[in-house]
Length: 353
Figure 1 (cartoon, rainbow, N blue to C red):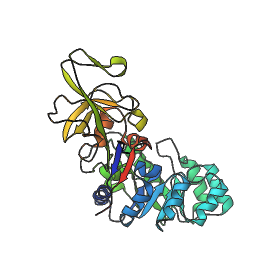
Figure 2 (cartoon, rainbow, N blue to C red):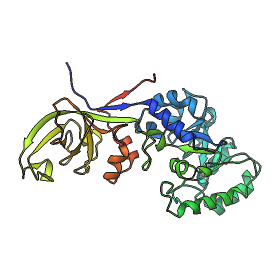
Figure 3 (tube, rainbow, N blue to C red):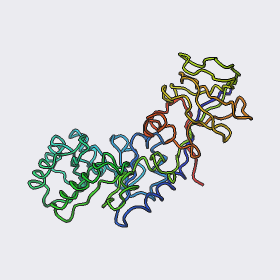
Figure 4 (cartoon, rainbow, N blue to C red):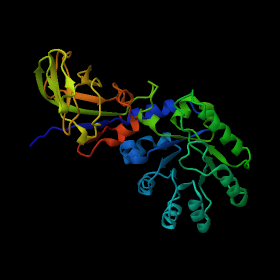
């Protein structure tokens, strides 16, 4: 018995090329932490650890179960980027030599009661206003408990992909002002992908890089999309001028057209609100979405593709059709598309040559 499938094809060689490109932008003293949370942004965590370990100085995740999976595969630094929230998780972290972010007083109380000050990353809020100690709050903790201890001072940039946003310089200034008040043995980390791309002189001791590894950083064409989301055409029909296509009749033909139905919909992870005109690729030619995405199908205008048949692949993003295209044209972000692909899509992880 055979059946057709949508596929998510992942190419680890592209990870490696992207990391090499990013590392070439770092200061010579900066170390590279590969952020592989959320199953490596949907790219399969265990595989990526094996394929990029030699290029990375450490790995960053959020959930402790992912950290444990990595520890089975690697002895390198593993950072729990939101730290721990219980004594039980602290004990597990100590046993497995995880580094821990500490971002509020509740977490610091767990650290203090456990008398554990190894591998700590103290996060300060410099303007993201999400996680992180207030400046005065952090300095009080530092003066009382950390003045003689090694740790990493960290923060997170809110707008590093937008060099016109004044918040970047404001955040850098706050971060550097605070670090200048601390002892010389601390390390510093504020750089994400956008910082590496736009402020490479601010990568300090650790760059924490996520979306750039996977090719989802908007505004750069050197970083390639590492996954291909594709599905076969299951039907082709000719429609007449004035005909409507799909639910609610959103798409109306302004001329006679040829419409392909592709075996992928919102139950597979394609956003239901993808707009008409969104580019896809069939037989290395650009076609476009025409009609509202349904649960199992997406309709595509293939009027301009001379050779197009049932069974041909339709790519929604790939190394040749960047994921940033569908993201930016639909007011989405690459992260969302990468992590939304559902389990019924067959995942194919290519092997390194």
